[in-house]
Image 1 (tube, rainbow, N blue to C red):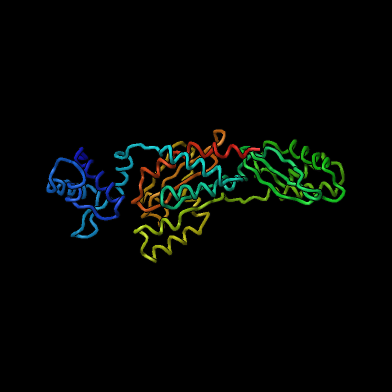
Image 2: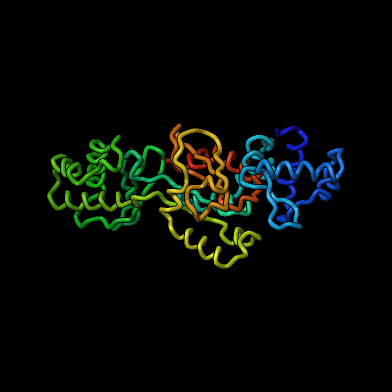
Amino acid sequence: MMDKRKRNILQAIVDDYISTAEPIGSRTIARKHALGVSPATIRNEMADLELLGYIEQLHTSSGRIPSAKGYRFYVDSLLEPTRISDKEIALIKNWYQVKTRHVSEVFQETAKILSNMTNNISLVVAPQVSQCVFKYLQFLPFDECRALIVVVTDTGFVENKIINIPEGTTFKDLGHIAECINKRLTGLSFDKITTAVLKEIQKDIVIDAELFETAMEILKQALVVEKNERLYLGGTTQLLSQPEFKNIDKVKTFLGMLEEEQLLCDILQKQDNDGVIVTIGGENQYSGIQDCSMVQATYRMGGQVVGTVAVLGPTRMDYGKVMSVLEFMHQHLGEVLKKYKV
């Protein structure tokens, strides 16, 4: 039922509506696209596409716009794979080099890059540290009275904190504490490092009881991490400039949803598979975004999925552009993060 002519007309409708946000008529298609048929023939084909549910008409006298079913067919069957340009790749790499000095800045800047390149809202989910595996702890000198305690995970992410060195404690003492802790904890996931496990280390730290208590407090402070995944957002103003978001009540509802960090993390599908996932309109389970589309991909370090990048926008988003940007991030974000390994 979906022959080549109908496919070409549907592609023309989707492409034009994405770029103009205006309903598309048969004369517009005949004028802009060399399909080799008359406006009357295009009108007949559009009527069939409407009956099949691929396009819809907002008003009796208006042109047609794609339906969610039409966008799904477009993404699955009509959209040609694309890649971002070499110029865009160079801009992204330069952005990271200039603007990131710490691992947390990588996620913040990734959100900015995604929103700037797609003109939609970006979501970047950073790893939940409690699910990572403890690799080692290290004390680094900061000044005469303070030290920097660094906790490194198996994925290379670092938690660090400046602490006051207890009076009478030498840097050699701190080195002994780190050695005992690493011997006992290396290889354990953070959620397995309980108070009971920490107390088992006490027999190895025999300097004095006060120093042991100090060491435990230092470690507990270093392991104070958020239990929820960390979410970085970008591009709210870009999305609200879209014509789909001119309704003030709709904007209020949408902005309220963006304040619910855990909800947004839950909306993002948990996936271990490679590739880019597109959910359109009613395919999104949360009612607040059922007139939106979300495109998402995972990123990895050491072969392990550690987070998610996504773009949220109106169903009239530029799917080709968004998918190509996320495919690049899926392939290369892990490489960006590698340089922050200690």
